[in-house]
Length: 227
Length: 227
Image 1 (cartoon, chains in turn yellow, orange):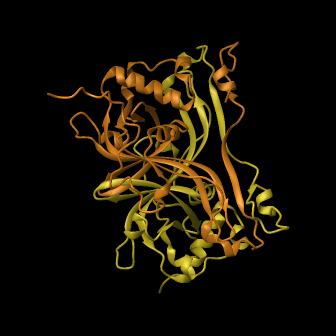
Image 2 (cartoon, rainbow over the protein chains, first blue to last red; image 1 turned 45 degrees about the horizontal axis):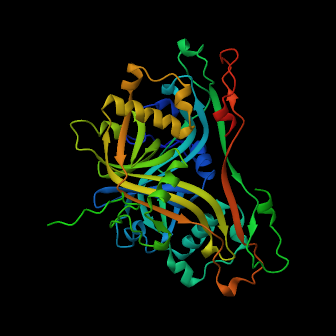
Image 3 (cartoon, rainbow over the protein chains, first blue to last red; image 1 turned 60 degrees about the horizontal axis):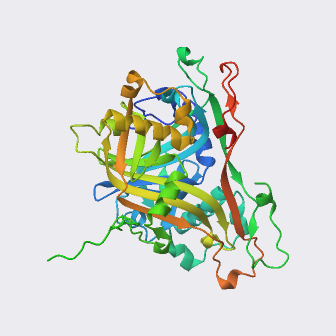
């Protein structure tokens, strides 16, 4: 007689693999899903890596996170997207998202560093062919750039949707790497006369520049004024 | 009898190749060396792509440009640097640098875009083994982050230099891609009531946070106050 099944919670961390365990600074690595999601949700441009004719290619592109899945944007004519397709087994990719948070200026050149948060996702990307999934993915790509924007734009028509390719990549083999804090100089260097410390970096939004042909009476929406 | 040789100037542009000619938005591509150099000089974090066990890997790392060469920073224990070495023919890499300059919010979801400047470099990276080249490369990596900083820090000693690996990559197969300007909506969408325009993005420096153990009397140097 079997025992009563225990209620199971979804795992809160990704399982480390050979290629998500760093060879150095392992203490900076995290597999916590909340940590990974927060880093992904704080950006909208990733660097997509794939292999073409045996050589690596790295291209910047837009992404959106939807649960445990990433969607990446492209034209159906672009190389990585032509390499995925229904008859295709998928395309091995590596997607990396990086935020630079500060310059760590130590007294010694060797201990100079950068405060950063990055996520690296390994996996096999597939083209999104289901029309409803594609529609939702396109909305999420717009909303990743400006939250709420997809509700304030004309949705893609059939021709536009057909001209846009979306690939998906499951969040499965994933790691974050984070460096925070101050300088780590050698004790014997502390008396050196060089300024040491951290210069914070941040992304800033400028004043929105309206298109000259805005329809009369079109005001700056709240979701942009709040940026 | 041969004619008098004409004085030759160094070429001002990189020669396009099959993999540096984009499959889409070709009008955004540039091979002008000044354009490429300006984009590279405006950053210090690149995304380094290489192939490991047949799969792509993309990692953020520091870089510096020195003339027609990039130097990339790493630990001697890190994977890409262990794959380069004196007995090694080099490591095929793709190095990409991206700046995001603005959000282009069109009336139609389809015409949403990003203003950006990016450079993609393809080539074979080699480890720097000459001590003098390595010393200059380490200085340039520090100065790429903060101009002038290398003169205001203790240089690496022998042990530190040995623990730091530097790889070099010649700027040969290189392209830039740039998107600037405003929205490109369809004429029939101009009367739609959605706000459209560009939200500029910029990188900002926060107030430097001094290390609590600064030597007495150490002032914030001018090259940091100017940031």
